[in-house]
Image 1 (tube, helix red, strand yellow):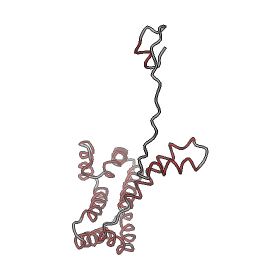
Image 2 (tube, one colour):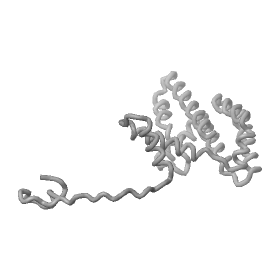
Image 3 (cartoon, one colour):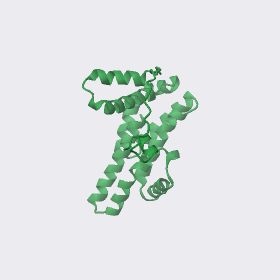
Image 4 (cartoon, one colour):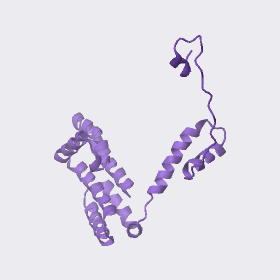
Length: 195
């Protein structure tokens, strides 16, 4: 749900950027292009520079700031301390999004209205897809590491080994210690594998 809100926010930002480019307002277009990460990030994770950029957006660009506030308000639903508070926040957000005059968020409000019962059930039961998203991300990273393997079995084995949570003790293999050679003038260099 938050990902959909972030996508809607980015759609608003891109539309405002295209509009600024059509009107030959290149300074505004550049500001909107540079605002992408500060409106995506959570407010508590913003750097000082990004906070200044967000303050600039608040003062100069009402629609983009309204879209940012809609995204952040939607996040608050999952931080609610009770089901009734979450339900009131969701209903208030839906009301605001329906009348915000931002087409991307009006469309999102229709989508969330259709899924309202499921969203509230997830809040009531404390369900989250965070674990699934974490595993998907780890599998993508494992796939990148396993790119040179010749079969899918190697990828599957690596994924199972990494994600299973098992910590198998591997047999210790003694590593031979290199002795400095007499021809080498620097014993440390010989120990590092140099000649």
